[in-house]
Length: 243
Image 1 (tube, one colour):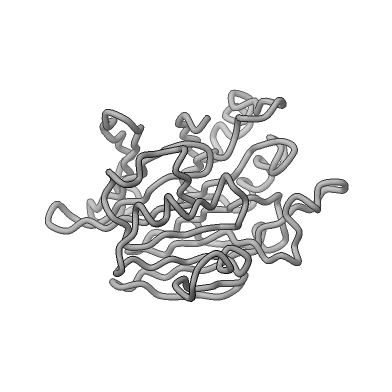
Image 2 (image 1 turned 90 degrees about the horizontal axis):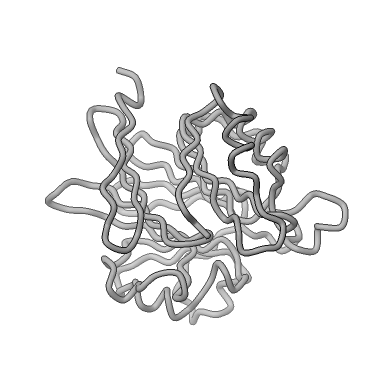
C-alpha cells in the first residue's frame, strides 16, 4: 500500500484551521495551525489522542484551553518561538519539553536538551531527531548563527517522518535529509528562506506534502502563489493562514 492512501482535509475548529493526513493502513494525523511557527500535531485514535506542540507562543493561541501536551518542541529562544507562559499553560508534569541549549537556560532542569544530530525517544516509540537550523547567506548569519546550535526537528511517528525546519536557510544538513514525508519550511525574508531557497530545499528533500510556515509579519511579503507554482508537480503544497 502506498504511504498516503488519500489526502483528507480536516474540519476547522471554531478558532484554528486544521488539516488531516491519512497514511499507511488508514491512519490519520492532524495538524492544527495557530500562527507564525506555532502549531500542534495530534495523533492516536478516538480512545487516546496525543499532542505535540511546536514553538508555542501565548499571543498565538489560547494554550490554557487546548489539550495538554504529551511533548513540546522548541526550536530556539527567539520571542516568536519560545514563550514560557505558553509552555506552562499547555503542559503538565507528565509533559516532555524538548529544546535547544539556549532555550534550556529559561527552565530549571526540566527540559530534554538537544543539539543537532541528537535523538531522543518519547513514549510509544516516537523518535525525535534534532537537525541543525541556521542562516547561510552573507549578511544574514547573525540572525540564526550556526554556533548557537538552534534546532529543527524530525518527528518519526508511526511510520511517518515529519520535518519541522525551525528558523533556517537551506543547509548541508537539511539538503541531505532522506525519507521525509511531510515538511514544514520557513519562508520569511530576510530572516529565513526566500521562495527560491524553499523551492531548492523541497526539490532536494522530496517530501510528499509541504506546508510553508513562519511567513508574514514583515515588510517583505512572501509570494506564496509563486511558491506554489514553482512546486507544481513536485509536491503537494498545502497553505494555511499562519500570519
